[in-house]
Figure 1 (cartoon, rainbow, N blue to C red):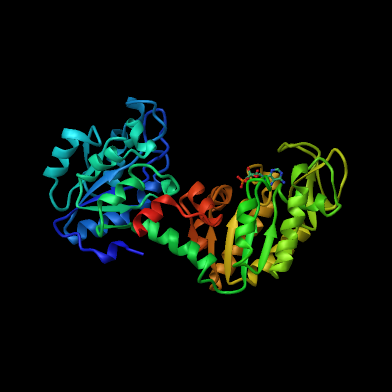
Figure 2 (cartoon, rainbow, N blue to C red):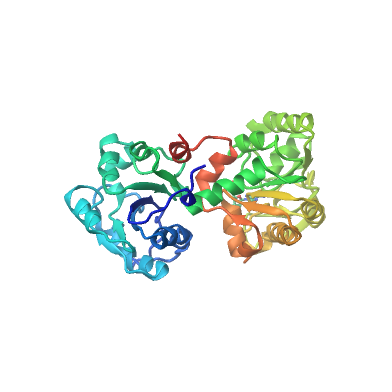
Length: 395
Ligand code: AMP
């Protein structure tokens, strides 16, 4: 794996694909700068080597060159975070961009205009990639959020940088942390898979059975398993066309000696609402008219026990409707148990989807080993897919 440390950027221009697709408010102010902060170490390393940085990113989904999607809105925020006044050029290819890149001196940073102002970016157009490539001496990919896309700036461009391309520090960390779960793991390995539906997690479930010892299933998707096993789930979320598949996954787990932990009780509600009447119920005896919206007390104790004994943990998906306070206890309890395990030396990765939001919401972000920055990209890695953005650097 080629990383930043394999190169010295002294007097060189690094063309860095970053993910500055940040949320903006109506005044075009950045409301969450996590993605900018995440690439700071990469930028600093290059500047400290004596190089310069040319940053390229997309922002939103513009149809054409729409002012509202201009990256000029974020220049001040990037400058403040990095601690260097960032220059901006109102195009990402062509004369203006080439002139600005050429004039860039060591220690300086240039931000290019939104890549998606050209439809060629998402089309993975070769000539567009080549026009971007002329701007830098080295290509660095540090945009995990788009690593699963075969776009011009995320993958295609790499072929113009033979021997002069590498991962940025963020992408390196993402790859390393998933490897710590899937490959170089310490046992016992536990995966907690929650969320709404089985259908969106099937490939992950099938792919993770090999490296893990324990599989905890929670959230709405657990009810498809419970019903498949003959339980009464009332009005809980169920995918009736996935009952067979649920049994198949349980069978596969058995063959691979993976211990599956399903909820034994649930917090049930008489409507999908914060103000619903609620009560605890055994998981397979949920009356009609009631639905399970969170794991029950016994389940939380059971799951926490498995988590505390683990040396490696992957958490993907909440175990209840955590967005509503009455149904957030299960997810909070998972988060606290993972934080405790982490404190005792376990490696914990939270990634792909809503568990990331949950961890942030409950202030547990710093108490787990790693929180992934790429939703879709992380999901595809867990599914065992090769991401175009990663393959392009490795080839
Ligand atoms: P996902 O994006 O697949 O990880 O699903 C996350 C969503 O699953 C969250 O919005 C949760 O509110 C939802 N969820 C979790 N548990 C349940 C449940 N028991 N019933 C319905 N939805 C749930």
